[in-house]
Amino acid sequence: MSTLSFLLEGFQTALQPHNLFFAFLGVLIGTAVGVLPGIGPMSGVALLIPVTASMTSGLSPEQAAASSIILLAGVYYGAMYGGSTTSILLNTPGESSSVVTTLDGYQMARQGRAGAALAIAAIGSFVAGIVSLIGLVLLAQPLSNVALKFGPAEYFSLMLLGLAAVSGLAGKSMTKAWIMTVFGLLLSTIGLDNVSGVARFTYDISYLYGGLEFLTVAVGLFALGEVFKSILHHETNDGDIAKIGRVLPTKADLKESAGPIARGSLLGFFIGVLPGAGATLASFFSYILEKKVSKHPEKFGQGTIAGVAAPESANNGASGGAMIPLLTLGIPGSGTTAILMGALIMYNVQPGPLLFDEHPAVAWGLIASMFIGNVMLLILNMPLVKVFAKIIQTPTKYLLPLIIAISVFGVYAVQVTTFDVFLLLAFGLLGYWLAEHDYPLAPLVLGLVLGPMIENNMRRALTASNGDYLVFFEKPISLVLLVIAFLWIAVPFVMKLRGKSVVINEDM
Image (cartoon, rainbow, N blue to C red):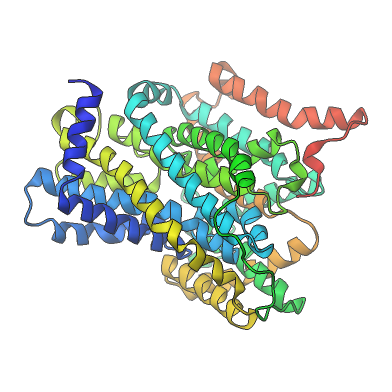
């Protein structure tokens, strides 16, 4: 049978009334999970596994597996949609991959363009979802073969390239951007060493043994940092700010967003295929790419719609791409897909090369349901854009407590410790101080994300090569990535020495 025939059979499974209900329920819960900071798709999917088991108890094993995975996958990509809402309106990332959206989305909201930002985020997410699913149908096998060629050395070089690209997130000073990158890397080393089990920089505080929770740092720096800025600068908004105005994006907005959405969707999909890379890295890379190719890079960070369209498209593209190694190789590319894999195994469905032969209804039913779920999300989110946009008009005396409450609840829900709440407050104060002194926050967050990946892959590569550092240069893919990373750093310095203006030093 052809791929098209299998896909049509998948739609027959996905369009069954109970599966349509499961898809809708999944994307609805996923949107709510994305909006609430700290919960995230991983926690949302894990919490719902026992619920789906009871909801599908009357179905056959094959039907129960298909229905459950349709609901859980809906939560996964629904959370990618929802994460942009509070990022744009409250400068509070709903989940880690939405951190980059705060850079321009929140500025657009403050300029009275919250409706356009939310609409473009929804449209970009929808387009990326469809693009990634077409890629999933057509390219699953070839792309899986490419991903298999990425060993620890290649992943290490890819992450180094990510750090080199941090210059694209620089504010007024590249030096400050690198200081923040190193600071993020230092923070990532806190906790128990994965290999030796030795405690590093924990100072006998047991809460730090697991390292710093990413969302605690991100929400503190961005959301509470903004709260402290409003309080200490006596910024007030008693409903007299600029009106939201037009909700749907203009033709100019759509034209300006078309390229970033297309590039973000494709970049996110290909990064999602690589196990371990994930949506957060995809959103950072897409933002950096757009700033590099833009004719007006100085607008980034000031409220340009391309700065919302690109990362939102990338993180949704990555969620579709991450399904390829899960379904075709049985390799989970992220924490959430690892939980989805566990759910499949719970129903005696083994992801991997034989999945499409042994359980076609589950595999193709899931892919077809993701098409339907993305349409549901667009229909669900677009009418609510105006409702969401009104949030930014809330007077400061009500809005600030709301941001604090959402932030504290989200962080406490992850770790269930008051220590993380105090840590949240500390990073809020730190975020305010850093922003006041023009230290960019995004490089710190990227360093925190990439640090563990860099360390783990470097150790694995050196273990396999008996400590020979040449392993990073002997692998062709690794060598190419290292050369690009070196040029990314060296070229701006050479240009600066020759007296030429360097775009990356423009103010964000």
